[in-house]
Image 1 (cartoon, rainbow, N blue to C red):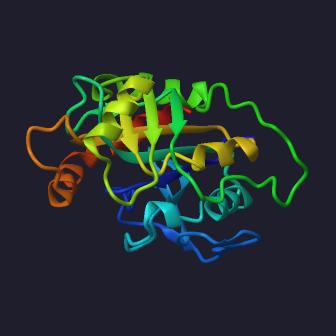
Image 2: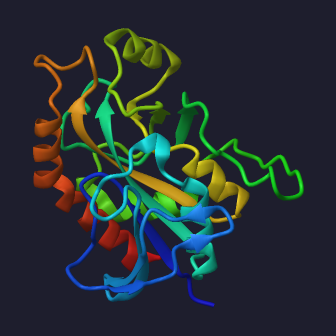
Length: 242
């Protein structure tokens, strides 16, 4: 059976192409998904696309129904998921426009609906390696020169506010290379559903205390708009190789 790839678009990636067929179902046993899933094409193959923050972009990170989003993608036939995430760069050399494919994650969030086990049989899933290595390799190898770093630790904060400089210093001590607000519980839920999952991160700013200028949402948006094509190209190359 051929793989059915789903792509979750984060900030800056509300659509893969200008064409697509919306699949009207958004209700799940866990509530409503962020928006309708689009059936579209990438690299000559059919893929599913879900805009994580809704369409238009309006759902804040802590209010996203991650359980519904992942459940719906699996119900629609997804057998693997690649997620895009806009992040801040913590590690040296990760400036705006850099593309990172993380291999580890640290969860600093709280209060989010982070498991399906409240309603199903209890199962302690192995999360030693939170991202699927085969999908990661497709992104890293396919992305080639477009991928700035093929490994790293994603630190997921609660949001929607940005972090303080001291919080970023703490995350750096913890080993985080990038910081975002949507990596968890998405990765953990995918593991509970046995959905292979990987992330591609676009650095849209240097994290608090790392930037020589004050952080600006407008500037982050500008960077995302100018560089998101790099993410789409890596996704296209990876999709073609899967």
